[in-house]
Length: 391
Image (spheres, rainbow, N blue to C red):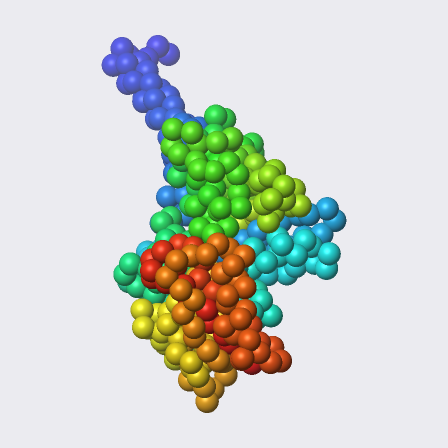
């Protein structure tokens, strides 16, 4: 039996409606949500991954810095936690130096401390927007640094512990803001991506204390002459969070024979991030325990009065800076004499000989002496010799 025209029209419209509905449903299912990192242009993906990582609130970090000399290594390990949202963090640092590693390189890596027996192989620190607290491995107190940090003219090695991309400084997070990979990254089995890129050598210098930078090459580096590119690999998980960064910094090593790092041929940094989310418990702004104000307790060695006691690791990595501490507690050294050497610098060798003569009366077991370098002599308008005895 033939259908009426209205009935046929209704059947056609119903079929069309079903078809359009089916197409709309399939279209909706086929359009995935934009990924916060991988949907962006390739050149922006590492920067966006850095920002997305910071938006997680916080992360645990572990970075190793490996210096290689022949078959031996010196490895610094930094572990800690950073609170991105609260702009604070805490970390510990330790060195493991293999037997046979060049002594000159070892000394410069641990810092130019007086009485190297104490070294600076271990330390802890906390950082927030107001202050940086530093605790030497052998100390029972924290040093609080804030404001302009420069107890000696041109000396500030502790500020490298404060970062810009995270509160904890000196990590590879600091260089990622300028990394621009050309490709969108290689796919990883976990759904993430791995990027290969580079950053200017000049930016690598900011990962190290000022005194150590002087052993690198070329010097100086400027924005107009940033130096050779440093290769870096950045791994990002499926959610867009940075989980690993690796960089080969061999290009910063000096080839000059008089460099303390002349025997070092390899330098690699490896950073791992994990445990994303707000820190629990929150990273402490003020550490527990005794805190000394560095502005009053950290002084040039020549300002420590005869008979006073000092610790040698101030976080500044400089042999002419010490921390004043009570003599009835643990201490690294006791000052046995302070002497003025003269108003005119007589030359390096003569200054050393004058200092030895000045301290001759205070010599004994574990005795040491230190004297003003030319720059200090110029600032003070006289030279000083300090005699001290290690504890």
